[in-house]
Length: 242
Image (cartoon, rainbow, N blue to C red; front, side, top):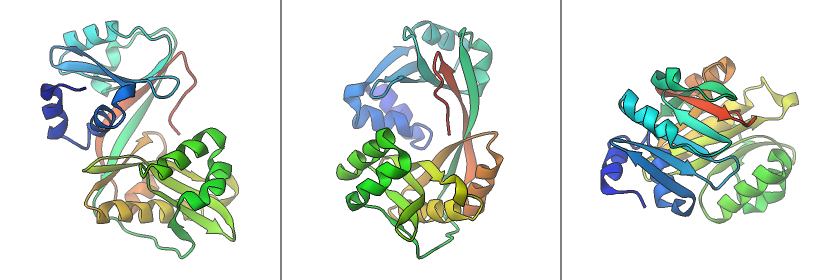
């Protein structure tokens, strides 16, 4: 379990530290903290490869924390200001933006709706077996909110919340079938999911690659603004942000 000092840090910015809050409180059996001074590594092992969040306020602490990483392959999340300290032999770096919204412009469509476990087969077909089954399990446990757009009986665009804390709903898995892109479908799905999150008194947030200009344009149109930046660092793995 996380100690009181870290808990106080997380609560100072529940948007930036949403994953730390969620993983330490809900998925704590998969979560390990390694601390040095004011900094920490949070290692999350539920999925392969594991993810590691590094937080620190000075170079010496970052250097020490990096030396504590013993995993062979992983995804590291770290602030851009510490990029010059990264020296892993096989790494790929993807800059990301954290964007937030608390007053969305909603592009409403009648063919967009909230999905339930009754839509399990469609979710699995759309996202693929591994991710689809994960989303369905999260739905069964009331740990996600999923919205989708249907043409006829076919799910063609969807998005869901990766995690939801008391303060934040982090949107992920924004996807539209290739043949249906550039029609505004993602705008409708994400905006209605964002509306759902905000109506429940939470901030909607999402991460997006800094070079994904089309997606950023869509999110800004909905009302998302830039809040923070981080680096996604894949070490000895091809895992990368969508």
